Amino acid sequence: MDYLLHVIIITGIYMLLTMSLNLVVGYTGLPAISHGAFYGLGAYTSALISVDYHLSPWLGLLSAVLVCALVAAAVALSSLRLSGDYFSLATIAFAVVFYSILKNAVGLTRGPMGLPGIPPFSFWHWRLVKAWQYVLFVAFIVSAGYWVMLRIVNSPFGRVMRAIREDVIGAEALGKNVGKIKLSVFVLAASFAGLAGSLYAHYVTFIDPSSYGVMESIVLLLMVVFGGMGSLVGSLLSAAVLVGFPECLRLIGMPEAVAAPVRQMAYGLLLVGLMVWRPEGLLGRYKWT
Amino acid sequence: MILQLLLNGVIAGAVYALVALGFTLIYRAVRFFHFAHGAVYTIGAYVAYTLSSVWKVPFAVSFVLASLTAGIVGVVIERGVYGPLRRRNSPALVFLIASFGVFIFVQNLVQLFWGTRLLILRVGGGRIYRFLDCVITGTQAAILTSAVGLALVLWTVVAKTRAGKAMRAVSDDPIAAGLMGIDAGRSISFVFFIGSFIAGAAGTLIALETNLEPTMGLSAVLKGMIASIFGGLGSIPGAVCGGMLLGIAENVGIWKISSVWKDCISFLLLAFVLFFRPKGLFGGAGG
Image (cartoon, rainbow over all chains, first blue to last red; front, side, top):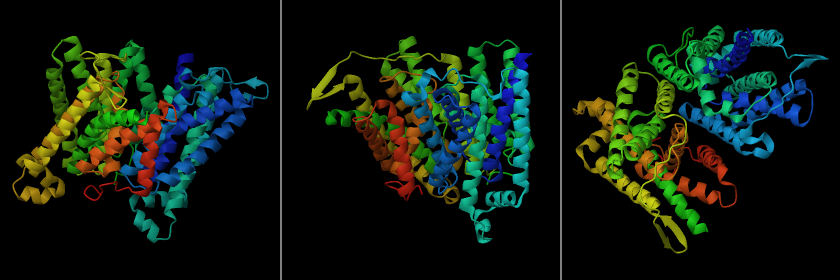
């Protein structure tokens, strides 16, 4: 039972990640491959604040969101001048450098050994250590996140996001500050990734660099594409299916040494198949341009 | 000391240049980032390992066979994945994402077959040459000479043969080339074969120096991309110079800081190039 609750919690965290990346990739049309890095940045910031400085995990969460926003602004300022493939490459570059820092800046991040003993969240003296409590907590945050993002994409701001995806020059000609809007979307999505990272770190209480490599960013991109470009409901669905599916492999008793590569191979095939037959994803309405 | 670092840089750069050559050649023909190039490189290295260390085939033979296998894998990727996408007129980003899919698939196929443990491929005795207080091992000398040889052969194929001429024609203008009776599909497959062949060769060569692991392709393809952007995407001399400069920058860079930061050095370089001269050194042809 606890195992099922664990899968539900992880699914919730991936729902936040996928929805927020969809704002960037699906709605605004920016092929960013750095979301896994922001997820890791959030997890590490939050964990380090509460482990090294003995501050409340809530302060950790807050600083995770702020640090992700700041770093995302710096990344966006340097990479948003590039278009298409080059933008993807620049964001991969960020993801690789970030991973290298996690692994090699041992003084700051403890390196490959990982960071144990992260305290859980607590409401006054009531610590969130039981899985069912955390399920409720994550469910609340995912719903709130969904509501906020839905409001954003249905607002005039969201309309401009879609306009940028459809026709950058057109949006500029209508007097929209395209650069500023791209920057805001990128920063917003990264803040949500930071939030997700913090939720993850204080739930599992141990993190290490291996979860935040470039592959993580690519898998998140896959989740967005699979669920549907520019569809928040698609992202919710996709996170549920793609997080749940590997667990089924485990349930049918496949050994982990086989299950891990088989799962990744299935992801790879899925990505290729989608690109050939349905590049806009399951529930998506918009094609890549 | 600085001379030794330069020499190490040139040797690392030679292998980067090979990967970049294949990458840039393919980019020139199809105009998208063939990310799965890294997976083809991994295949080359592992096939060479199995032939040479497990089946005891002479290294020169396994080198050729491994490169051929890589070449064939490249053509299979082109025919099986990119071909259908091209028929659907997909934009470049769709190709890039499909390419990630292929990369993940092949990398994990390698992991399934060979496992995650580090494998070691070593050939010949540890003969060491010295000159000007530099040290170069026999293996390194072999890597350097084969890389230069391959680059020259490649240049000859592209510049002097009929197939090379067709390749250049298709890269410049596929429609006009088609009107002249060139079979574009075949020509693109040929490009993938040649490009993947040298990627496989690069993988085999690097396997002599470092360990093999299934994830080795990621850093290779990223370095290859950086090197070719550095030299100007689509330019053959650019890829060679870009690879060399990247190798030298990384190895001279670690003179003052720890070698674990090699990757960061190359990406800082990339950021610098993208910021100030996105066309690269020999830019124009690739655009």
